[in-house]
Length: 262
Image (cartoon, rainbow, N blue to C red; front, side, top):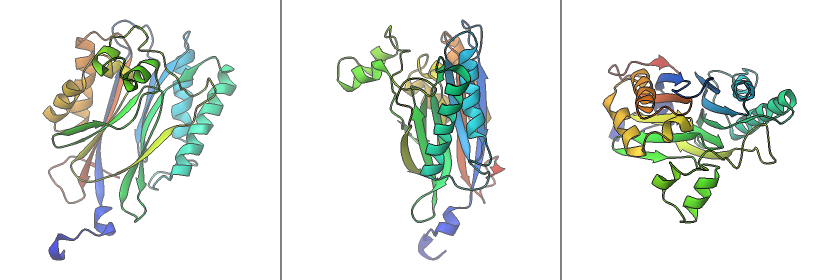
């Protein structure tokens, strides 16, 4: 390609290396997390409500996102697709539980930018998170909907203090309960060498960001990274359910990356 110019057609030829792992942790009796790790949706839902209601809520959320009529495999998602799918999940949980249970949601949807190039739509409701890694960069994309994150935003506590704050599990927005369930949305470019991490707070309350980033860098495959992250969270205390989905982005002609066609 002359001058190394990158056309949309060339940029669109990406493949994904996907890994996922989950564990109920060392304290909880049930695993109320659910996840989805297949195109075009990579999502983690962390249920809450007790007496298995949280498990129902997170499962209904993932079931709605997995509906192929809403988000067709092989087709890029749009912002409207994402909003409608999340609203459908919210409605399904409310109907099934009478608004007595809820779930967080963090997700990355394979999409396109305004020029038809590969992109991600990142969405979140609650305190599950999406991170993006690129070489030495590791950034939290989502913003927690939680009481402690509001304190961090006002400068009253540090992110490190938020991880051990007694009200760290209190979310201010969730699907299936409350009045505000629409997701926050971001559009990110997708490119070779990028990695996305979608996780429940069972990971981020046990490990600091620099620890998570180091584990990601240590493992060449997404499945290896996902399993190592869950193991590290358990070793650090495992006080909550922990679920991670890792998505690595590679070029279609990159033989060095074990991938599945996207």
